[in-house]
Image (tube, rainbow, N blue to C red):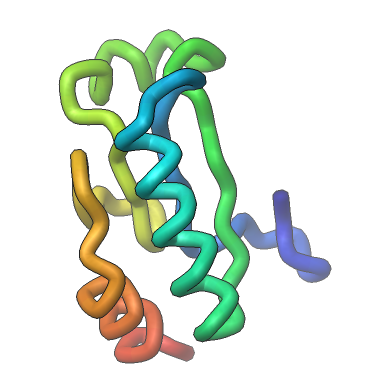
Length: 88
């Protein structure tokens, strides 16, 4: 998913189908992003061998602005703070 200006969403959840931690991370990210007006995207490690090689043991991984923000569990307050403190 991209913004109307062609830029990617600020937040990406990297996971895999059937992963309960991934589903929980996506739920938290969706809730926080809706609250602060940000978009997010989800990517499966099964769709990208490079992601699988890098993150297979850490999923779910959340990226903010292309950088690793968290893995395994997402702290909603920390994510909200990160997204609102770095508005441009």
